[in-house]
Picture 1 (spheres, helix red, strand yellow):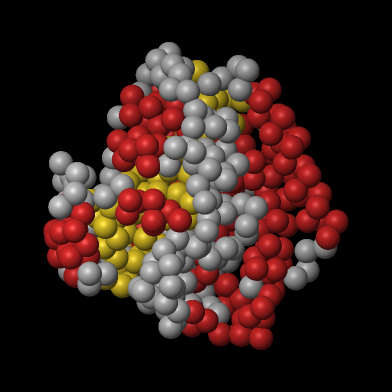
Picture 2 (spheres, rainbow, N blue to C red):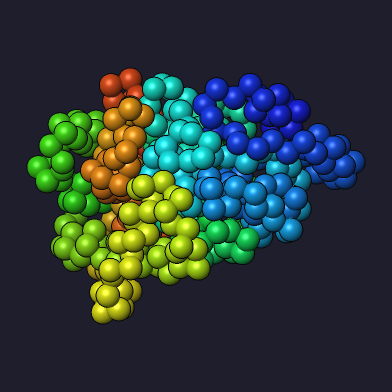
Length: 409
């Protein structure tokens, strides 16, 4: 039995105060009734507003797509529906999924369910806030450089990025096709176990979840390099994270990953920016209608050279080889999901592509760069605000990672 049924989810969506819900599916109750006549119990879910939903507007939170109504469901939506899911509402996102704050949106900023003066994170901020506000237990997001895990951390919910390429991206507006990944926000990790039956491509042996050895990459200790306005908070969050690992009774060690430290934060932007500019090149004449931060990022992509782009793609193999060596000594990697808790909306507006973006994505881009599964687990609190712990495993160890999270739960 699901804690939140379809009817209750619709009612809660209509009373939403976080600005996470942007379009309600007015056929949801009728769809739930049809599903209920079969052999499965209907369950509600929300969908990020860059994911196509047949007959229901999908705006990408942008003037460029404000009136767009898809003629088919995205593959991920179709799969959830076949399993008894009912799409109850579309969730707010940063415009074109191109930001970490969900403040640049034609619907306005999404507010954090723990403090409405603060951001929800992004770009799947609406999906995370809807789960955090108990409007729904499961929501679809997308993750290119942390867009599921960042808002999961800031909103105190679970965020799952599967191994890249395991779930079809058909029917989802691309941002950076070689980095884009379908992801999920949930109230409990048992939802992720259920997803492995809905999406059998999410593979991996269950493996041992007892007595594991956790590796904490040395690149989490970067507060000395962090922007001055965030340095103190970054340091406190890292110490809180390490204390949390101790309280859980986990055996953990610092691991040095020299190549990753040298190249990941330099090279991933070459891929992300170049591919985003290429993806939206057909609308270049309309880029001026985008929010300033989104427009600036699109324009930056035009300046990435072919040599920079090709080198960034090629180096992923070397970084992955380094990971394989590292995993001979530890079972999983762990970091704070985000280096900071949620900033205030007033501190972010107009600065979305500045220091806050670099800080929020600091610990999430590694898994995106080499396509690892990663889960943000709630449980930490710093200054009264939630902060997630990110667990990362080798490619195709999704099920083991999920079971590990359930064990910790």
